[in-house]
Picture (cartoon, rainbow, N blue to C red):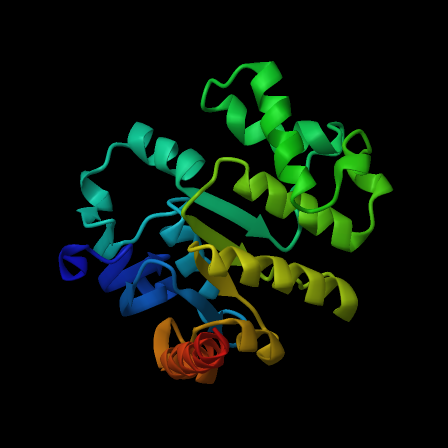
Amino acid sequence: MANNTPPVIRLRGLKKRYGIGDAENYAIDGIDLTVKRGEFIAIMGPSGCGKTTLLNILGLLDHSTEGDYKLDGQSVKSISKRKQARIRSRQIGFVFQSFNLIPRLNVIENVALPLTYKGVTKTKRLKMASAALANFHLNEREYYKPYQLSGGQTQRVAIARALVNDPSIILADEPTGNLDSRSSHVIMEELADLHKRGNTIIMVTHNPRLTTYASRVITMLDGKIDTDTMTLAALQKPANQKRALGKHSKKRKPKRKKK
């Protein structure tokens, strides 16, 4: 039965071209990629290699020039602009390096903002936003303005906003790029926890240390995928699970003998 489930994302021959004639260049140049539900993928590569362009296409903020992008088994080309906007607001959560919080709105209003596009009433929006902030221990900051927060707190608010719609896919573009090492660790632990809960996460990063949180690491070069590898943690997971089961079964035997 599981084999019949389509991958959450499938790209075939994807290209994104900018300019014409002598000025023509490909930001994305023939990418094939399959993302299974529940994967945590880290995308690395030098500046200008197409990482952010790829993320924007995956998030339906941009479109490809050539090739095919299937989301949950359906070609994006066959989805109307209105339905794409609905998918963006309900299925995809965005976490940006620059946070993108609105300065004039307080924290709870920023987090509640995506819910306005779903037609959720104001009372329910604020209640849902408050619950999302509680998950990040930010209740006491609900009525602060963004400028009153630390960098780590601001990014946690941005993640709460990305999650308020309970999306199945989270796209993160350098989510720790502006943070110190302690705040970066907190943010990555939050993303790792979301991954454990079953969310599909695709993260662009320049920091090789952050790839330890991912189950798969992709490096890009000149608009193409250069390498695509499973991490050691992902490869060891089945063995770790068997080991854990073995430990539990050994613990149960002495209890039976005591009886």
